Length: 137
Image (cartoon, rainbow, N blue to C red; front, side, top):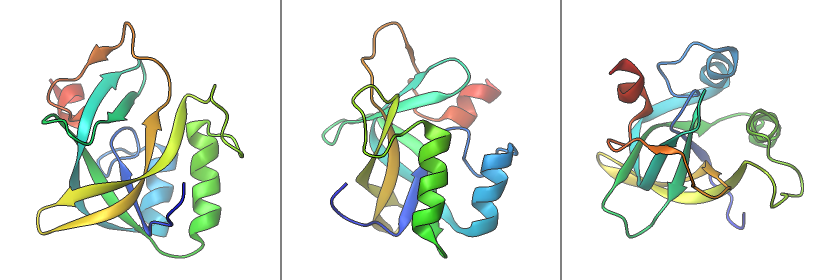
């Protein structure tokens, strides 16, 4: 986590369409920027998804981009806890927070993203890369 992005890309239960308490809190303290894309693969982990960033992949993960406004470090600490990311990061953590370049319709933004940190074995790949669309199908 070398760079300090000022934005967050979320692809699962924190997306703009979700109403769970963590998603609602995120919308209250951040500014929704729009929908973005990350090269990679999305997997169904049961109650939530996990994404793998693959910079040269043609497959895309769809998600929501938020601008981190006030107290970004406190918000990231809360999100680290929500995502099960330890400080310092532990290789056994289910997710890791990394800086990834995300594509929006008219720009590319460096964003924090919680990436799946375990081996992909029996997890089902969400081929379309869109968790909201996958749940609606």
